[in-house]
Amino acid sequence: MMTTPCSELIQEYFHTGTLANLPTQLYINGQWQAAEGDAKLAIDDPSSAKTFTHVSAAQVSDVELAISAANQAFKQVWKPAKGSARAAILNKAAALLEQKADLFSVVEALDSGKPLAEAQGDVSSAIATLRYYAGSADKLEGNSYPLGQGNFSFSSKEPCGVTAHIIPWNFPLSTTIRGVAPALAAGCTAVVKPAETTPLTALMMADIFHAAGLPDGVYNVIPGLGKEAGAALVNHKDVHHITFTGSVATGIGVMQAAAKNINSVTLELGGKSPILALADCDLEKTAEGVLWAIFYNAGQICSAGSRLVVDKSIHKALVALIVEKTKQLTPAHALENPNYGAINSAQQLNKIDGFIKRAKERGIQTACGGHKLETKSGGWFYAPTIMDDVPMDDELVQEEIFGPVLTVQVVDGLDEAIEAANCTNFALAAGVYSQNIDQALAAAQGIDSGQVTVNNYWAGGIEVPFGGNKHSGIGREKGLVALDNYCTTKAITLAF
Ligand code: ADP
Image 1 (cartoon, protein in one colour):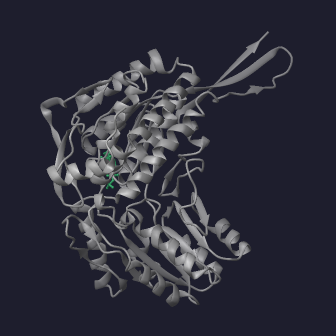
Image 2: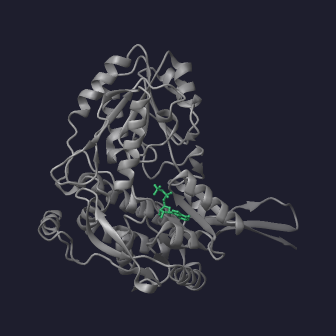
Image 3: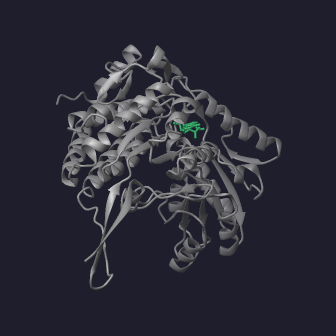
């Protein structure tokens, strides 16, 4: 397969204002097709605020077609397929994506506004995810049950059917593959509804899966509005599991829709994840960890470390060090590969700015940033921001901002640190920085969250289960446990 290197693609984009051969239509039953009535979404480059392409916006009738195709494919080809055959296709898809990694990275950076190196990391993670679940496809074993003489009882894992995948705009490709790879490995078919602003790489995966030999109808992509295409998908009676990543408010609606059809859901919702800097932490290592926990992808990550819970004995020194490091962040167009990227939309930029303006009015102290940024490329940028010594009941502590804003809470000792960590409705991720293993483990045990990392905020990988408690969600993705989202257990008992 001929591949075009990043440098040529970047040149093409800066020269023409777009890229050739981007997908523009829906992908249903192995075919590219326009939406009913030719409705379209404008796709913007957040680094320049300019529209660079348009994509069809699925209507209710298009969603119906996609679900019907996924249902047929489930019954006729994908459920009956051997696990090893599914594995071969997923492995082939990983290899093909690897060959096209440059193209996918450039498109992802362009569409989301994240720096090219971050997009390259997302593509690598999607490749690893495809391989990980390919390895599981022929190992979905059941059990046997000891009923005694005259009986024989065993169970098998069966795919649950058509699965819906509702994707957010912050990790468009890796979130798609995080749900679709285990679903396909288990024998389910998929209908993917990407976010309005970032549908391109999920659509491009259609060509990869097709070339890898995936039968028509197993992977369908219907970009469109959440309230139209998304709602039609999650309310449909022929969908049997919904994997949703997005806001709490929308997640509640998705769960209500699922309840009407008694469908299971995996919800990965918001976060306000704390990083505990205990009195004995290594200051340099902690500052570096906090910097990237909040400013990677300009803070647009559900599991971003958005609250620094710091012991009062090191508060001033640690904040000064993080502020110092923050000055090294230089925003620029995503394809210039800066160390700090754009905000995905004007709407999100204004939402972030609103939080900070209100905080300033309440007299909260700004340690750095706190305003929109002008850059050479134009676009939607917000200064990396640190808000210092914020009270526990403040909106900056309690609400998810989903942007580059670190909120600092000052505490006295481990017990107060744990109390502060658990003071919100969210419970997604947490980090602990300490050189004392007993203190670190006590903190990890005391924090209510789906995952805790110690002395390296982003530690982990596809092997490690991921998800939240409280308003951060239900269920786990990643790891082998995610396969359970897409399987039902059938017990068969014989008497003789
Ligand atoms: P955000 O506010 O960050 O855009 P949302 O939770 O609204 O987060 O969006 C996440 C995903 O959910 C997007 O793909 C969006 O289109 C989709 N979505 C929005 N509203 C609905 C809905 N009512 N039903 C199903 N999906 C929806």
